[in-house]
Length: 261
Image 1 (cartoon, rainbow, N blue to C red):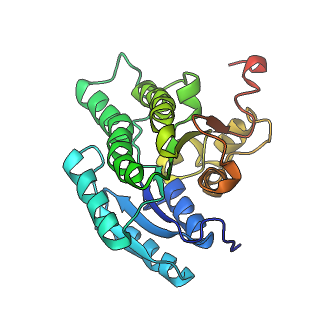
Image 2: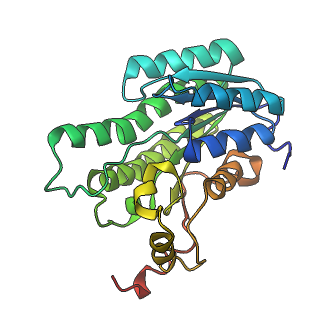
């Protein structure tokens, strides 16, 4: 459904090639925003296909290959965005990696570095580079993607849980530091979302049914569920909210005291 909540806004969405990032980019386009979509994977054509879809909606879109764990690539992405659109109103940090089933005792140093560098350091580098642009305009909105396992530990989450917990404190610290520049910084903490990112844990109907039993609303999230919450945080409807971490998990967090593992 089209609306105009983000009309005139320009947004960067990292990890935009598929899953939650793709759903957010499309939702933003339908809400009137022009987009910069970035992803480390470029050669499979999915990012450019999404850019074409966004343009067909009637919005401008720039697709960029970027490894957000590398400062030079993040800065190049931001320069390209500013050159094309002259401003950045919204940043959504959606890019991330998960190595399923690895406990902290099993995690190798290389795997730890990969998860922390992409999820936590990458989010920070994007916030830093885009935040400087926003500070110059005295306006901006940053939305980071944490997780339910950033709020509570999860079986098999390992380094991923640590990285997502770090994003929560990064969000709160930036919200404090950037408030004087009229920049809001918030985070979402999704539960299990049905994407290719975690397909191995929900792909069978029985697995999805069992997982849904722990969710009070009785189902796993679709990417569009997260996109709707992101639209709220990106719009003026949430204009007095900053430093918040909002679970989008169907009630999973509030049901934690009554669950039996």
